[in-house]
Amino acid sequence: MKFLVATGALFLSMTAMAGTTTYNIKGMHCGACAKSIEEKVCTQPGVTECKAQLTKGKKNMGSLTLTTADESTLTADKISELVGEAGDYTVVKTPAGKAKKN
Image 1: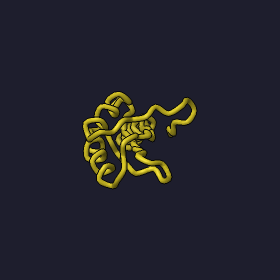
Image 2: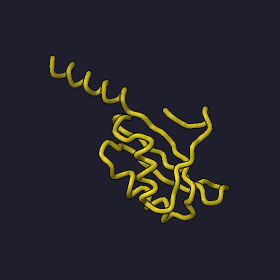
Image 3: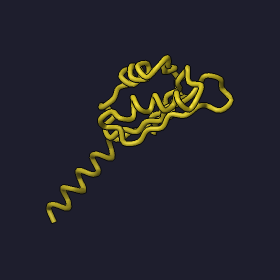
Image 4: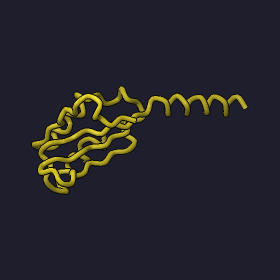
């Protein structure tokens, strides 16, 4: 019984630290761009879900939605760096109140 309680507490603490954030990315224009960003960012330790995609109706814009097991694993600066390493892409700062974070 003690093992079950400890396992449940560990699960709850891991869940509480998880976070999902969406980043706007400038410079994306095709599916290969999204794939390149995913290959660079989604393979990082601590990433549990990750999806890059083009933004409909906006030229050269896309988004990266990223869920990490622990929000301290990847900082916003590190994500910006990785996105830049994937190609000629830039994480665009979103106005206050517009960032999507769960």
